[in-house]
Image (cartoon, rainbow, N blue to C red; front, side, top):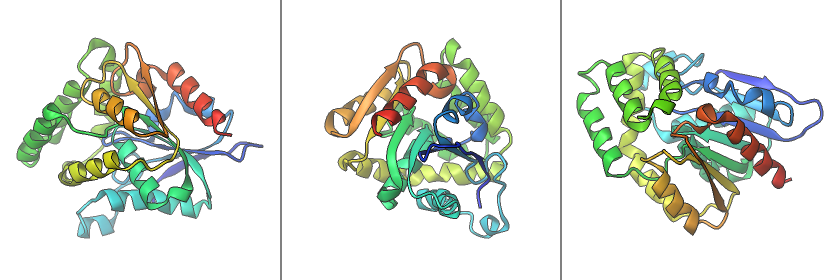
Length: 260
């Protein structure tokens, strides 16, 4: 089972589950825990191969990772804790996992808060993935990861987020990185399906105004999906919760409380 951390509230019945992105870990939510545990029961996960969720013997014999298998890891923890409903907060690739979970178990998801959300890969990000696939077994994975982090978060004010993710990625093994990178092979059809279907679960997209790779497609999807709304954070890149934590926390808590 995945490693997880619980912060239980004395009176609230609301649960909030945090899902990090590829190369990160539960530690990326350190600027959220204090504010959120004042209001809600909080569950924070380490995805497989990340943080304290070390690769298992079973993973060694079955190296193929899929979005469904990783989503099932999250559901296993939720079921183990007997959580009937939760608000889900994700960042970057974590938003894809949350959206996939909502497809598989819609009754479990009260709302989705998508930070630095990925709903479509533009031409530049498609090229980036293809280059990565060509070189993933040749070039040291940290060199590739640093390049990707710089392309996604290029500005001076993105440096803190960039370094945080790079430092967390150093804890991965080359084989683990390659397994996760192979997920990109199934990402386009999955995102195309998500764009086509309005799942009708309240969704808040929190995007940095400088998230040049992903913000334009989020604007398009919010215009089409009736249960979605968008809040754009100025002077901010891809990792909204790290770069502008106060705004991220305030907007998210306000959104969750509005659904009560």
